Image (cartoon, rainbow, N blue to C red; front, side):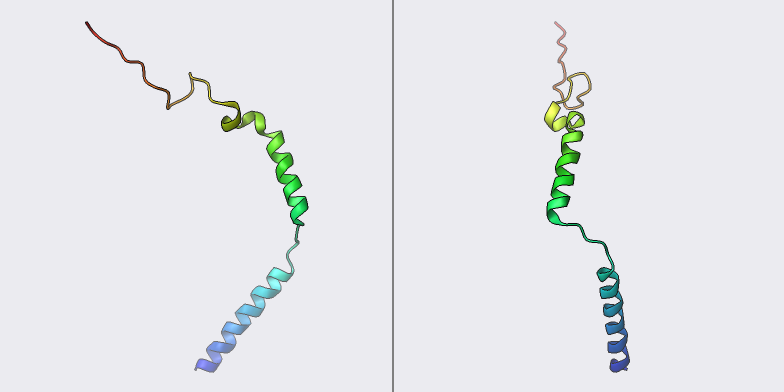
Length: 68
């Protein structure tokens, strides 16, 4: 029983390794260049870089209204 389960487990490992070996790989330098280009292209839409207008900011301090 343990021998057949061991063979089945090894077959799964071999199948996974074959799948991973067939994947297309990208060099780290190319991936970094693509990521940098994407960040530069989308920088104008990033609220961490451009800020959020006070009219659309849900976290702005609420105005306090006092009744005298």
